[in-house]
Length: 130
Image (tube, rainbow, N blue to C red; front, side):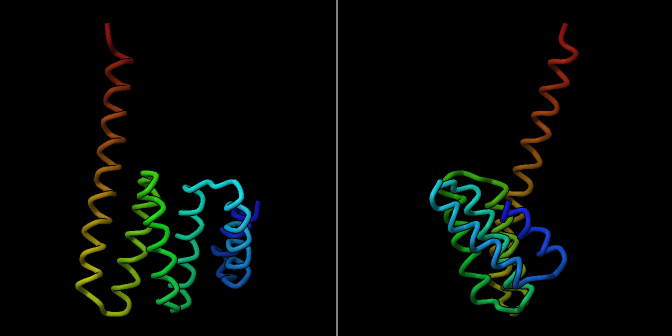
């Protein structure tokens, strides 16, 4: 529940309340050890800190999210972490790093899109198979 409350606060730009919810959710999640949820929480925290221009902490959270997401192959979280890192580095004018993360973000996003399209095509084939 704290995760979703944090999302609502984040969308309302109530960042301090969102941070509190996400940090508490992260602590509770450590007990059940869901790596995908941990990566998602860290990505949310990265976005919030970036919105607050607290770029160093945003980078730390986004890199940790990326590390966890890669470990478990969570493509959506990998994509989000690359996007976070791209946006932060772009905002602080570190264009070489921004470009590197942009390339990674686009590659993962395209890969996910292609996988989805292949699944849709396979489903259509199955639906119309004689």
